[in-house]
Length: 286
Ligand SMILES: O=P(O)(O)OC[C@H]1O[C@@H](O)[C@H](O)[C@@H](O)[C@@H]1O
Image (cartoon, rainbow, N blue to C red; front, top):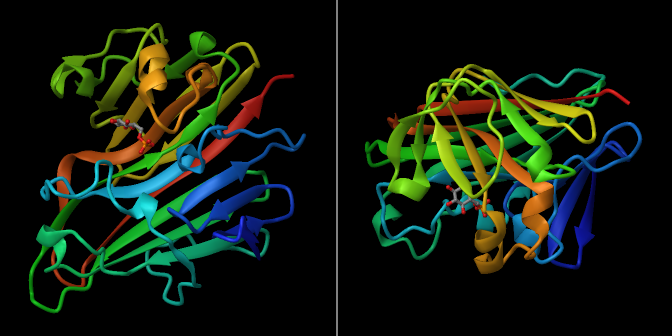
């Protein structure tokens, strides 16, 4: 692992020299490349914030908290996790980095009673697979449980959103955040994109694919059982024009598909922990 300063502001940790780079700001994976050195993740040219795998918790119960959680806008620290517990154990042919966020978030009046520890391990495997495991631990000393929801925001780079399909979510139930979170059932075909999509597919299978039909590239997300759901988002033209952190045309080159636990809140008693793992792999035909 090699750590360096980026713009004097944020520390990045590079896993191997070419494969992957992780940003301490927000606990985000900034770059994941294939063997030809091509970037597989989407990075907005407009702002750093819209980069890639955005690991964060959503503490929905607490209305005053930032939308989409606070972990993504906090500085995490690189710190090796000594007790491995449920974390995938790094082997000699893996490269990995451990990040921690355990500060009390300031300015969240309804959250001040709770102390938590968030850890993220990012592993780059010998075949280029990228595994992220997040552990949330309740370290309250006041005997109180807390509840949260969680999602990985994985921004895949695609050549053309109109030639992008998601496979594995057919016939699944989903919440549509563009229709007040209403529940619907997906049709029998792979998902394609003709306009804005902002959904959480519920209780999905564990392997979901994102096919870039123009580039003959297929990403697969493999998730563990504690991540029951899959979030899918593309803001389309109007949404991109109104998003402060996305260029007007950038919606064409990205799709957010990430493992999540949003159907039900996770409730943790003091000193209990929860882990959620997603592994990304890519297959290219040319
Ligand atoms: O910019 P972020 O935090 O990655 O979020 C992008 C989108 O992610 C989706 O999952 C949310 O439902 C949207 O509301 C949100 O705008």
